[in-house]
Image (cartoon, rainbow, N blue to C red):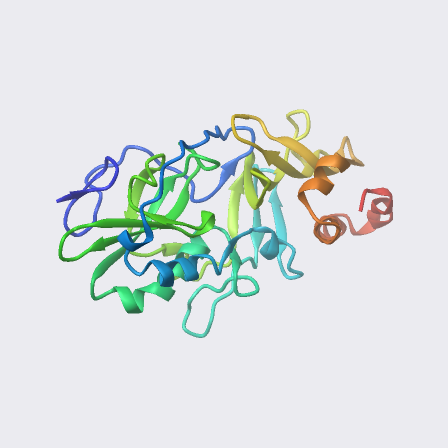
Length: 305
């Protein structure tokens, strides 16, 4: 039997008991507590197997939900009655059913972990057992209602353990990952195995977009003054930073008592997003709103962007 930071595993890698449920790689807007991890000295490169090859793969990808969301085919669906919303057509697969990254490098934690797993498995599988770990990451995805996906490598001969976090370009021993809480060990990611193409959210949940300057930028559909219907909802870009429980809206557009309303914090918005990124986000928001209100599209021209 071997142990990964608390949860006991049997030799097949299964968790014996986990008493907490989390939503994969989602941050709950206004509910995510962020804790800055303590600095841990990285082990020397020679102590990490295949250091150069694994590091090269990890550094070839970048954490982003923005690149998928602004694709023209991605649709927003809002279910006011059940207080849920979803994004469809987010994910693409190759002819073998493998999840693809945007532009060959961009994705959120699950897509990045699946991509890195596929890249390293052919030359590691003889020596190492490779697993997916659903974890609470201390900087932005600290749970218990948010999570993060990383990889574990376990040497088949001596049981040594190494961990990979593609989202944060991190590779090392469990000491480097001491701030993480490992919640569940998986052989595969079922949503990609089933070729899921979208994500569903409850009201109050957010879709991560980017991490810039130590801040997490997310998208969500929100209520207005505790009302959530066709006349009262907002599409919001929100920023969360370490130690802040409640995020700050930096761009909002939607309906308030049946009228289109909008707001933006231009200083923070332009600090965190490039002009072309802001433009694509607003064009996406306008396209979604025009689909919801085809007879009122002219009223959107006054909105920011």
